[in-house]
Length: 385
Image 1: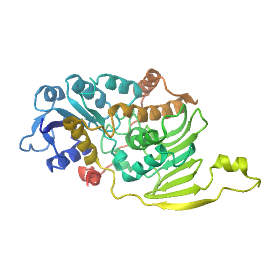
Image 2: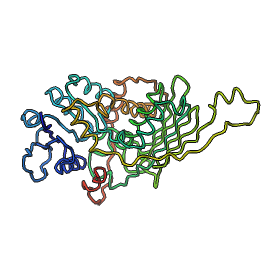
Image 3: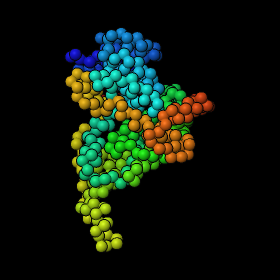
Image 4: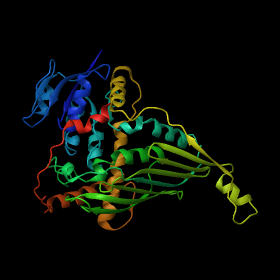
């Protein structure tokens, strides 16, 4: 195989942006041969691009080797299972699924190492987070004691939420900031620090917007070794911030936007505490402003990696099976809020599924009508530069 023939399922904002990227030839060896959307407003066909209104027909057409799924969240599971069972390679936009039980069903449809199954977690390609991953995994910080991540730079307007009837509903999207914006942050969190043993969540629903799902979240993660973390996010704070602080035996790393500072202890905290004969002393430390390598997170890099995995067997940046971890964290935060208790991990996926379905069936939320400007794919284009 010289080229991978790929079809895009879902021509909303992200699907259109992916289409423009592939039509521009930004991914070597990846050829767009089909698009599929259930709506009637498909874009004008391009040369060599078949169009479908039914995904089963697209899968059975023989004109694609792989699928890129950019549908509303719940369809990630059904479309993904159909494609995997048909033997196609699959790339799924975030989140992998809405809830852990559907993630398990989707992952179980994967037929093995010869079938490439990946997720679009492009922040793993960001040089800043790759640098953090290296610091943590190579032990530069020593054992991690505490983590604080305040990622409130996800501000969204009422126009955003009314741009699609499926948005910000339990039935259409399955959640709010945790399921739409923060799969990236939650994926990075578990990628860097691993999964906690317990989750306690404090969510507020429709605090800042006319929506029924969460738009303000504070969560507490606890590990068996005593490490703990606080995770905060919201779509209702402007200007917001992206502040990550990692406290380890060897000092404190602070990531504020794109600035990284390492306040490194000359002696580890524990060693200094045991050996010092002064009651109020602290270990000597020096502050280092760490240079961040150039570049930003790239959808193109993830798609290129996906293509190279199919053609040349290179390891995946973001295997789809790892996508279940960010979903389990999001689900556990919500379940903890609903039940007003700490949730141990691994969580009961079927219990969460039942609780979610209860909220779908009992929903009485109706959005107030208002005139809004429709969002276009241009609003998402900067992600592909």
